[in-house]
Length: 266
Image (cartoon, rainbow, N blue to C red; front, top):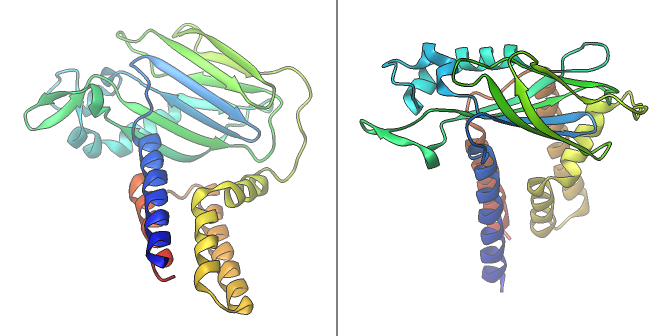
């Protein structure tokens, strides 16, 4: 019976991991598109700038970028992105970037030598404010001759508004939120952390696995408290600008493997 439970949990973890990896590595946008999702103090900005925007990374100047070119110039590309894609509130304060994900979309790429290359990148920025902003302006400056306008789709889950249209280099700042009173809170980052712990698949499965393998209540409470304290430290580090030196999909895979190992002990 225990083997069937282990097999079931392993399949669930594999399915969740597959979803997470595809979310991080394939955003589904075509070149010249921008998507913004606002939710309380958080925002996810996904966009697909043309490779010619990062001509300094195009070693052979073929208008395409490969994974090796991306990795060789990742820091410079990321720096330019953070300088040119900014979300600001009513105090003109920029949101804090929690995570940056940049990939070459291999599903639409072409072979250049022994590598897949594409004429655009897919980028995701995850940002946060310390409290819910009353006004949200997005500033986008990654335009060039091949991309003097982009299509955008923006959704505000807090106010239930959706905006779509075209953004041009002549009007590179858009207001997504600016009507109605904000939901005041001085604990924005804490709320983000609480929601992350309570709704994350990995946390729920990890606690479930702990319950299955731990016989004594005191030991269970100690392990859960230790896990919570450790995760709080990592969330605080990210909130202050620390980014792990490995790709997000590697971390997701390690988390899934750790839960699978713990479940296997049952």
